[in-house]
Image (cartoon, rainbow, N blue to C red; front, side, top):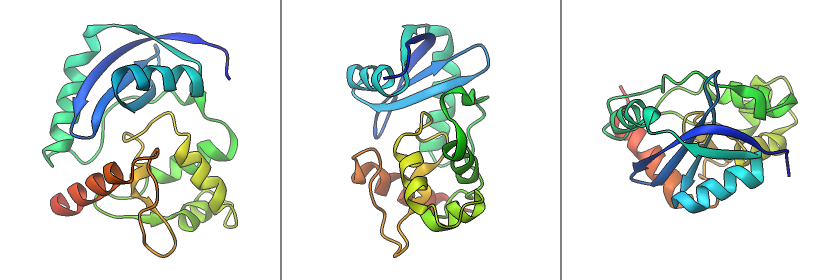
Length: 170
C-alpha cells in the first residue's frame, strides 16, 4: 500500500454510484466510484489517499458530472494531478484521454499509441488501477474483439457509460 496523503474531497452522486473526488493543490488527484464508504476505502488502499471532506469542491464537480450524464459534456475540465501514476501506466492513461467521446479503442490500440504496441495487458492494468476513473475515460477501452470487458468490477457501469456516449455523440 502506498504512503497515506491527505487531500480535500467531495462526493457527487451519479447514475453509476457515488463519485468520491480527491483534490490536491494541483488538481484532481483521485476519483473512485461506488458507495461513498467503499470508494473512500479504495482510494486509501489503492492510492494512499485520505479524504478530508471539503464541500467547496462539490458545486463545480456536481455541475460537470450532471452535464456529462445529461449528454451535454464531452470532456471534464478538472486539472489533473498525475502524481499517483508512473511510467507506462501514465503514458497509457494519457493516451486514453485521446479517445474521442462516443468512440472506443482496444487495449492494443492504446498500447501502440502509448509507445509499446505489445503491452495491451499493461494497458488493462493501467485502466483497472487508474486513480481517475471516468474523468480519464478508461470506460472507452475495450477488448480486441470489441466486447466491453470490466470496469472496476462493474461491467454494467461500463456498458451504461459507453451507451450514454454513443447516444449523445455528435
